[in-house]
Length: 367
Image 1 (cartoon, one colour):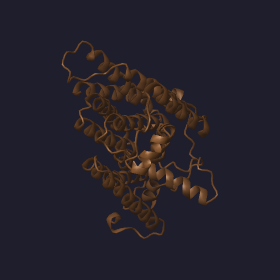
Image 2 (spheres, rainbow, N blue to C red; image 1 turned 60 degrees about the vertical axis):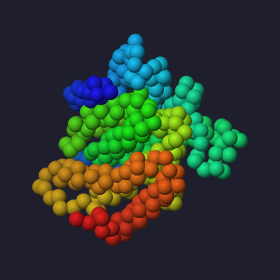
Image 3 (cartoon, rainbow, N blue to C red; image 1 turned 180 degrees about the vertical axis):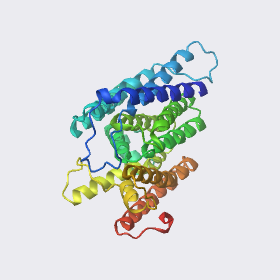
Image 4 (tube, rainbow, N blue to C red; image 1 turned 90 degrees about the horizontal axis):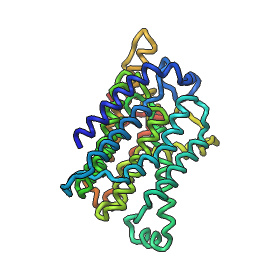
């Protein structure tokens, strides 16, 4: 597992350097009029290329190293690994296409993530097997197709959720890395070493990307990188619950509650204002923290001022993410605790959001 992680890290790192060298020849400029933009200068949004290369090559290396091993406890990267790669390609390549051209509309990207979900159901037999509630499990037993619908929603929606929180240097990347390691930890607890290895290599590839992304912001993940994180984590979460009955289905829900709730809350507030959910705005949680919480950064150079404030925003959200990740990892078997954790997180999020909007910062965000 270690050497596969090293492979993923260095492939992602080296591909990031190549992208930085060559991107200005092929990529379209990211418009300065975009409301979600909180950086200065033309930064390549093609980090997804390095991430994809690091993940796929490390998985491929795992497949070749698994052949002929006699130890049943060894890693077993079988042909199912190929299906992981095939399933995630439509979404990830669609995201990279958008990063290159800036012309692939939201509805087409949504269709590509839905295609990825459909491929996951067809090729990997993915479905949500239970809800951890007596009445919910009864309904799923009566209507098994509901488990397939939930799977499609998860695989199609989570990539866009990671794309929404990908607004500050190191934010989405570190959240994805933390979540991958948390999933890998639970996978090891239930003896699923191959799934754990796939998640650890994804985390390692993310670390290689973060070398260029934080704190300097030299390379962004773009849609391609966000979609890769979303698809891999969605498939891993469903697979973990599907294979191991001792894992509560609410474990990945609490683990992912920050990007998931950020997306749901964003859809609600846009609808409440009469806006389409597909229209970008500057009112996401990380953007409010950037504008109203992070202060004390003053430079004559406006670009440096923006970079420093950007970098200081991400640690707030890393800590916020840990509020859900830590209890999820501690109580991954206990459904009622995980559900309670989801409720507490939502209350904290909405309370903090409203306080920031009204310029009344919570004590934990001051200083």
